[in-house]
Image (tube, rainbow, N blue to C red; front, side, top):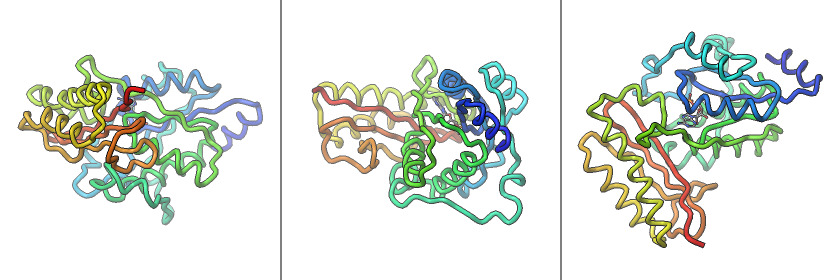
Amino acid sequence: MQGRSDRLRREGKTIVLVPTMGCFHEGHLSLMQKGRSLGDDLVVSIFVNPTQFGPGEDFEAYPRDLSRDLRLAASAGADAVLTPTPEEFYGNGFQTSVSLEQLPNHLCGLFRPGHFCGVATITTKLFHMVRPHVAIFGEKDYQQLVIIGQLVKDLNFGIQIVGAPIVREPDGLAMSSQNTYLTPQQRPAARSLYAAIQAARRLVSEGVTDPVEIVKTARSLMEVHADVQIQYISVCHPETLAELKVIQGPARLALAVTVGKARLIDNTLLTPPS
Ligand code: AMP
């Protein structure tokens, strides 16, 4: 990978990386399409990273379909697909990790200890292997996007981090590999995340500035479904991710729930009227 990238760089080519864990859906493909438009060479990585799964989060059961993914990546215009094994990536006495001090202490980080250390470490490794000019991450994993932006700034990677909008199913449910775990009976419960997001956007656009009121409304829309177990609903600062006491400018609503075996996350920008 490094030799290939060095050659392309010498030729003046712009390299774009889209890191993924595979099991592609339209969300992943939208990142690749964006990547295609931002550079000359599109590299997609597929790696179910064991170090970002915590105890009780089933690394083994994570959905995988490499031959389908390779087909889809090719049709989305990928020039190279990097598909390492855990042994290749973490063999040879691997012992280094990259961690951030503040940003993981919010939102998903509170429920998934060690997760963002795993993410920051694998992303660092991928960045050094692929040497991209641009890397694309989905806003679906908003905390991840903010953390990678900070990582790249703190450690001077010289890589442009680009966020891509959330791709949704026609019913509003954000596309996710986790959706494969949902039964048809659980679908209305899963849809309630989007109902909560829409309600929050409406309240803020109408001038509501109290996060407590927004969280209460979001909670009530999701809690009517017996299948939904809420992990968090947070109205937070878009850059620090700290909880807001009042909405005075652009804010993020972020939420995480479990529905049966699926852990679902979603988020949206909240924009108060000017
Ligand atoms: P994953 O394979 O789940 O690690 O996701 C790989 C990349 O795709 C991450 O940057 C995600 O944020 C992004 N992604 C996942 N789901 C979506 C979606 N529904 N819309 C846009 N991007 C997504």
